Image 1 (cartoon, rainbow, N blue to C red):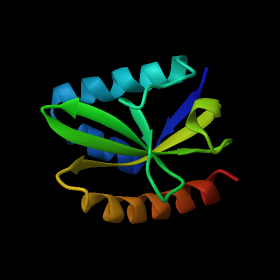
Image 2: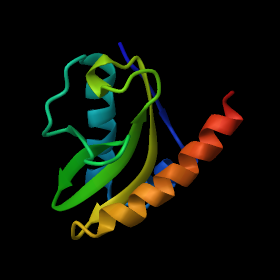
Image 3: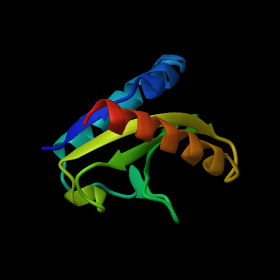
Image 4: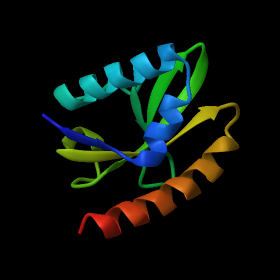
Length: 113
């Protein structure tokens, strides 16, 4: 069983989407909480970063950046945090999203010491 926290920034993004995206997000959170080994269709490591992406396919491509707190490998972690969500329109969207996720992670870690 994995503990998944969701930051305010991530919840605000999810809440601003249509109901189908909201439902899929929470279904995926349930899955990654209960299932130890997660298929890369749902959670995939972002190259050249310490983050993973939660992949939500609901008409458009939505992504939520996740950080595994207690292990470098998401499948081995017991605690993770959903940091930041965005709609993927191109691969260029990742650089901006990762920078934002890094800022949110910094704040999250300083608040949860």
